[in-house]
Length: 88
View (cartoon, rainbow, N blue to C red):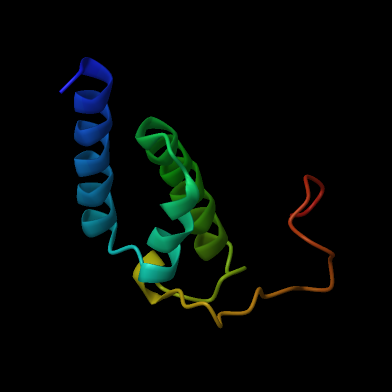
């Protein structure tokens, strides 16, 4: 096995551990299936996880944690369109 394949394998294992630690729902895990780079998946998961936690904190997603999020969860809105920079 070449070096790149070994790194990909290690990153894939690390991502699976992170998914398990964070109790990521299956539909979120499935989102990453189309990506080829395991390093990219790790980076994206960190960003997506932080965004979801931020949305939960702000009550934009009315769940207690990431594992409670489902495909059918609807985005809570207080009349603003989206979560743009001017949103408080």
